[in-house]
Image 1: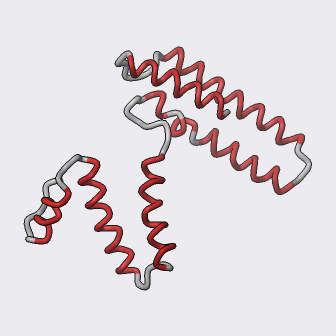
Image 2: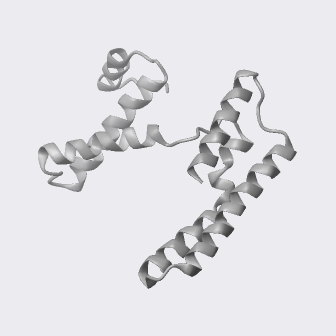
Image 3: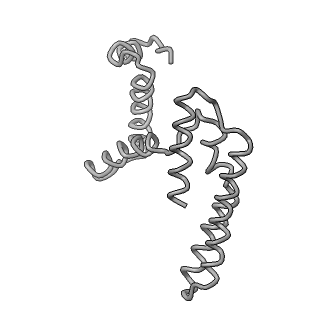
Length: 146
């Protein structure tokens, strides 16, 4: 499955370089069929598995992969959707690091305040807006335009 997903992403990048917006319908159907074939083969292997708890967990994973196939393969249908969620993970890492350094937040209000400040800073960075100037505007009561 991993190799298939990486292959899909490589082909997607090639098409993006050619300034295409999505795959042709027949290629999408072919990739979706391969995805479902992997799930079917996983179900066959799961039936042969001896350990009951592992069998249950794998079956639940296969059910989720099948149920949310369209979400998992959305990056094929719309090239503006990223292949991975690294940006989200990097954003969450900042909060997690803060929790580890300080041993957590004493109150929920401190956690909420930290998240609000981090949201403003990260939004300004992603939009390539001046960080210092816009934070000054916020402190002076002038709303920053995001």
